[in-house]
Image (cartoon, rainbow, N blue to C red; front, side, top):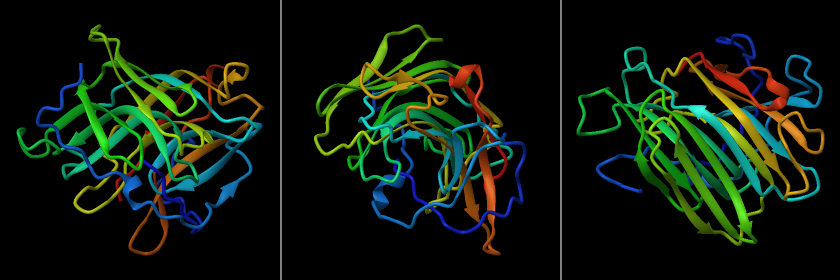
Length: 279
């Protein structure tokens, strides 16, 4: 899900502290990657709450952390997280949030991603506005592909790894279920491996409003690297680390913060994302 960039100055109207593959009858929200457009550069600030080496950027869809630069392509990213339970009473319309790890997609035209999605009202077989959860992977510009159902609260381990030039392993294991690992091996010789991300995502598009109210999402055991000689995390000074803040423009033309990441913890291997708004 390739991010779209925004340039308008932020007006913090809703901000807290920076703060087995079965398709079944599951539905998938439209991917941001389908736009495929190159938009102007983001605004940026020098740091997030004074954390050295971390700057912030506004985005339309993403909240989390991104690593870029460093002189070598990124070939590995992994994290553990809990499937977000969405409160469909607060966001009772078609809305969603997605937690994922991936390579590329930041100021680029390809993505290699795997994660989970939590939806309100996304499954026609369930009552309107009921919560719905599943795993997925994407190799943009290809479509999102559904993996298997998951449950809110499940602990998930996700990984994207370039195992050989142009060959990517995308894997996701539901640790709580204890079942095996669901994954894919995909090829992309046009992928640049220019960035690595651990992200919470959700946005407004067509009938979908987002992000759904997920409260707080937590990511841990984060590792990423530029080939095997440069394995690190979001505190590593080898590359540039960016805290992505998810904003949307309201009817007055101001940017409202929908979700933002907390400062890094556990030596750069953990953080949370806090939901504020779906407006």
